Length: 307
Ligand code: GLN
Image (cartoon, rainbow, N blue to C red):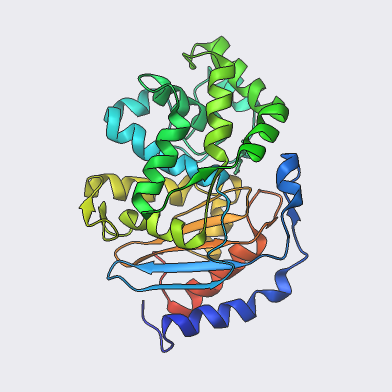
């Protein structure tokens, strides 16, 4: 990252820059429990591979990780069964919203990638083989990577389990097509509980750091996956991490990233740093408006885009 300002200066400049973006998006309310989150929250954390860590705003406040957990669930599945994962889910950008249904009908229940809901349900299904509570496995893996005891927000989990009609439709379609092996309700419960894992921006930047460091975690000083896997996960993030807005995200930010409807986004600067940002108001693709703007400002100021 080549820039005149120090990282703390960059972050405080971004904090000021993004204020006008408040009010342009909407907090997710299709999961009723998420609707009560304060829309004006903003936090950001940067953790570099050489140990610098800076946090601004509400960057130490836990938020609902939601789809960001899909990245870590995929990491566990790849560690467990390797390339067999790709017999159950594709690697192509979907070009459709995260909870799109009809692609599955046209493509025999085979999800386009592991980050859309259908693909994430397939990954949960893979983890259910051999683990009764994959949500706890994902929680503990993320907690291990950031060295923090993470929790699952039971109210958020229950709220989504009670209202997950669209995800149940996706899971039923896959079950009918034979691409989901476990019972629909078991997969839905594990998926919703996984999505309800909470963590702060500081935790998230630490947990994602191996993706910036070739599979090595400078936080726990251990290699957690092979270098090749870090490169492949970054490729998937770049092409599928923000669903049907990957094009504009690459255009404006130029970094591999994963968003979640809790308002979090994690972005990777390969070889250098992991950045986590949180602000609950979402655009129509389910990506944080203020978080997106903050990452755009970050990549512009520091000139750190991979593109
Ligand atoms: N739990 C959410 C859902 O399935 C996750 C979506 C997201 O964060 N994009 O709808």
